[in-house]
Image (tube, rainbow, N blue to C red):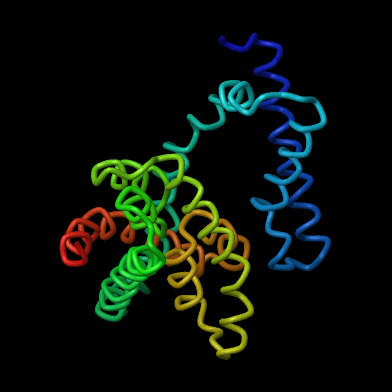
Length: 231
């Protein structure tokens, strides 16, 4: 059943307002990693759905307009990447090596750990592309018999965990270079890490955008290779 226009407008507006509130809380607490807007905003929406006894499918259909903006937003990532073009050219060898090692390690660890714990082939395939952005990860998983819903959950958890723990880890390792921070965040936490780095600095945001895009392509290429090797 398609939701009415009133429900579409109400849930779309509620989603935007909840994100604005989550962003204010994040800034109010001096960008505390456990209060990233994606995590707190999702928690608030879930609480609202439970309070109003609203089924999630209705909410998902009602916010289709917001999801349709993902494509243009992804294309817009070319802007911060272009601004940082000179810096990107100066370290392209290091970035290529990091992308290859980091991407392959993320895929192999996810699949290997799932296999060691006794997961079935479908779950292994679902977890393999978890470090890529969702529009790429879901079809890649389905190609090898994975379940898109599990992949979506794994991608979301990976992004939130990466955004939360990368900041303390980088601080502990005394890494302050915005290029390194941004590329690491985009490589491991995809869009969620990118959103956080965009608020940190233009340099970190540009490198995070590059890492997310390249890792998406690399994941689509490497998952079949790693899958066949482990199989």
